[in-house]
Amino acid sequence: MNRRTRLLVLGPLVAASFAAAPAALAAVPHSPAAVPAATCSTSGVLENGKVHLSGGGFTPGPAYVYGSAGFGGTVEIAQNGGFQVMNVPPGQYSVRQGGELTQCSG
Image (cartoon, rainbow, N blue to C red):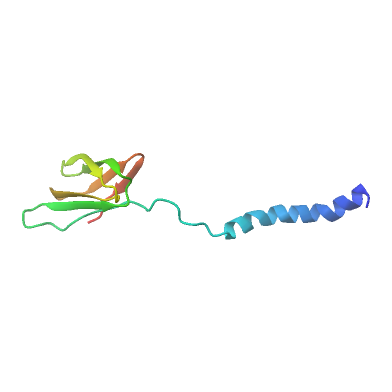
């Protein structure tokens, strides 16, 4: 087969394989090896007027809690990825660990 004939025959096949490659890669299932998303929540207001703050899915180590009621400070995330802070003022809270900011619900 001469060069011109090969290009005419193989050219469209090669182009089709490049066009199909992204679709084939997208169809491959990916295993969820990523760290679960961190979550944080506050309890309802307790009889003493305070709330409990808790979270999970974080990386063990230090994190910083920010609160709209003036409460803030470092918390130590346990080996299981969770934390609890008892009896804090009611308000909106968020937790920063590394470059990630998690808003607390509740």
